[in-house]
Image (cartoon, rainbow, N blue to C red; front, side, top):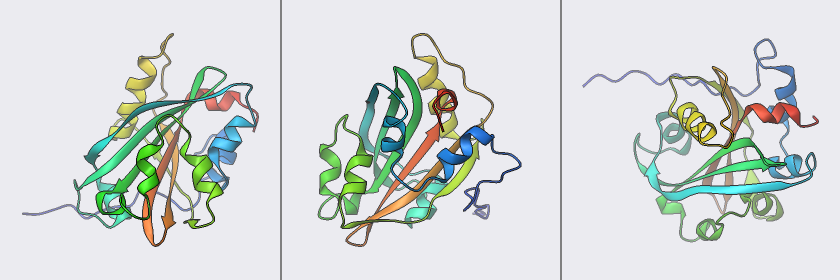
Length: 189
């Protein structure tokens, strides 16, 4: 069976020529995204969309050192600023990392994961990477469906910028991806 070679689409730095200027600070700030959004709105909220066993997408599996399609714990949330969705976040935890290093992962519910990640000195963050997603990516379609279900519905542009990184606790990885929705541009930089 022939397989296509993997072409990495996640970049270590956002390309200034194609990233909207309003998104640049959001893509490059290595601190807690949760804290950044909270500081720029009156009312912050998290909606847990689901936490379940799922499959890693190709680029996610490569980053986590897993086989393509390998089962992982997937947690998806929407972050809200003043009642408007501003971030779609997707966190992946390999099943073998659930016990031990990341046993706290399952008990988060609708609480923001970022607060715990940045308050635990045993957790180290790898550098950020960013990517532009479009209709060829399942995460783009997931974000589009989530925005369509909002009241009133929100439309999504033809592309969606996001960032991701690995967090390590006792040598075990958790991947956090954050995709910026249109209303993020309305928040102060």
